[in-house]
Image 1 (cartoon, one colour):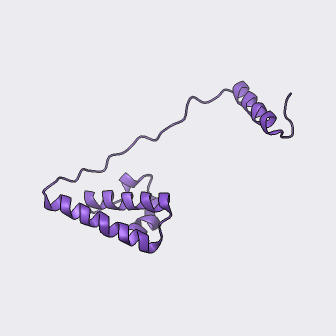
Image 2 (cartoon, helix red, strand yellow):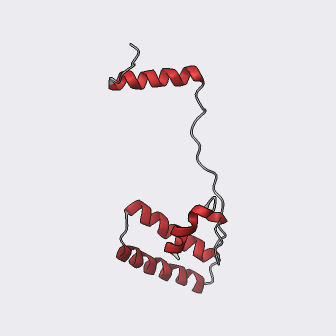
Image 3 (cartoon, rainbow, N blue to C red):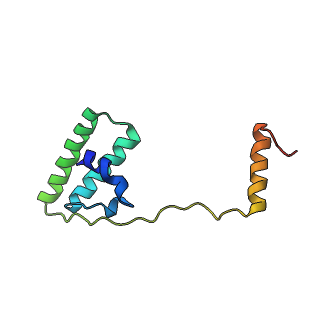
Length: 105
């Protein structure tokens, strides 16, 4: 499932729009995908993590715990955009700091 998600994830705007078969699939795969990317897991490591995650999810389901639906998250946006003068001043500051050509002194 993880590899299929990796192949097809670019076809959807976000993970929540992907056609998951169940809520458990969403939580398992997105957690494994995030872990794989963050820790550069090998295939063997990913399989071990998948086995651990699957055991945890199975235990949750067997206890009768309700697996929550995927929740869309708002993207974290930066601060306010700079106006033209502020942007040029910031570029000049960076150029001066690193001694790049065209630095204003």
